[in-house]
Length: 251
Image 1 (cartoon, rainbow, N blue to C red):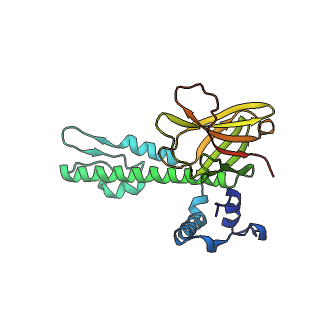
Image 2: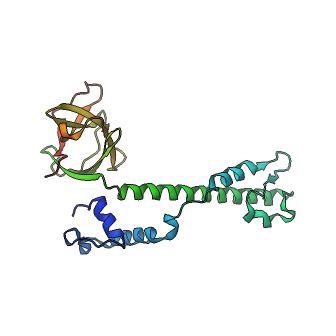
Image 3: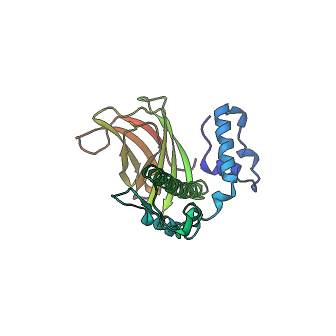
């Protein structure tokens, strides 16, 4: 079963939207791991914190905490401005920095560093979730299927197409396409009556992850898409070894 498009998943994950009958998902076709992953994702999206804006002073607080941490060379003291971190003030009586034994000071330094890393990781997670949500809910993203050729008949791919102010963003999600051999690479192309244009190259040697491609020409004049095998050092023109082919137009 091919994975549903971003828009279809977005409909199912929105509790306020009634999913049309023709877009209902056959959840019985999912295995236990897939259902568990979907449940975890739904739980994350249901959390109020995911949709809340981070504190306006978060950046200033993190920078203040980093600037306040200092280690003195002579006695390994950690100096922390507790005014920048009110929640930490209680750990230092008198509201300021004080001397510690070498072992305790090192332990406190490790604790403070770990806390700082945790804050930074939480901020990154919020930003990543907001960005992912934007992609899922983007109304102008259209997904097309492309098929493998006789060279790799088991291969296929989905191509997410998004029109932007600077061109066309193409996200290729390959299935069953092996990594390019040493000395070779894959190249993407758009073709049509207006000619041919390259949209990027990749090799997949780190696994079948999504590939970001880009076109500076409109799809209306270049609706056909293909991926070829290219040899490093040879002219950058499409070879006759086509591994994926399809049309990026509505049926």
